[in-house]
Length: 233
Image (tube, rainbow, N blue to C red; front, side, top):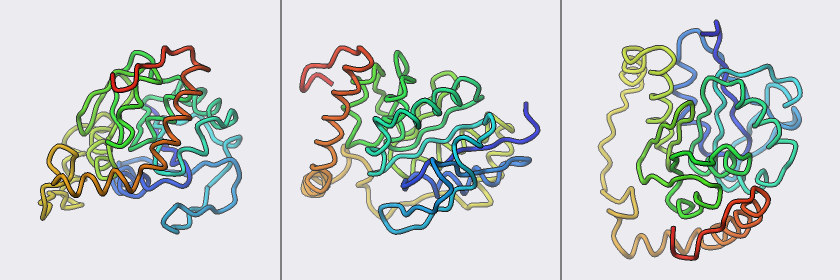
C-alpha cells in the first residue's frame, strides 16, 4: 500500500463534497483536485472549486474519484480528460465513481463487462457503455466502486475507506460523521417516491437526460458497443 492515498475530484460535480467528508478522514491520505487547468471553476449550484494542480502535473493516484452531475456532459467527449482517466485508472488501486461519474468512466472505456450503477435518471444508459446495470446503492466490481445518486457517495466512500484501511477505520469515520440517516420521507428512489413526485423529478431532468442519451449513442458507436434497443435496458 502506498504511504499516501490521493483522490481526484473532477470539476463541476455535486458528487464531490459528500464523499470528500469521508475520503479526507482516511488516515495517512491526501485528497487533491485535478483539472485541465489550475483556474477555479464553479459547479452548477455556484460552489467555487479551486484545483490543486493540472492533469499534466498529477502523479499516479491510488484512488481516482470521478464525480458526476450536469457538468459530466462536458467531459464525455473530451479526449484529453478521457485519456488521462484511462492512464490513471490503469495504475490506480481503486476507481470510485459517484452519480453520473459512471458515464464518464464509460466514455473512457472502463465499463465494458462490469457491473455498475449510477443516478436513477441515467441508469438506463449504462448498457451503451457495455456495462451490466445493477440497481443498487453501491456496486463493487473488482477495483471499481460505483455509487448511485449524490448521497450514495457517502456509502461508496465508506466502502473505499474500508478497502484501504479496514472496516474498523471506516466505522470510526462513520461514527465521527454521525452518519445514521433517518430521512423524513421515503422518496429517495423511483421505486418508493410518490407517482406525482417521480413524474415531476423526471420532467425536471428531461432535457439533460435526452442530451445524455444522444451523447451515449455517439460514445457507443466510438467504442463499438452494440446499442441496446429502446426500452430494453
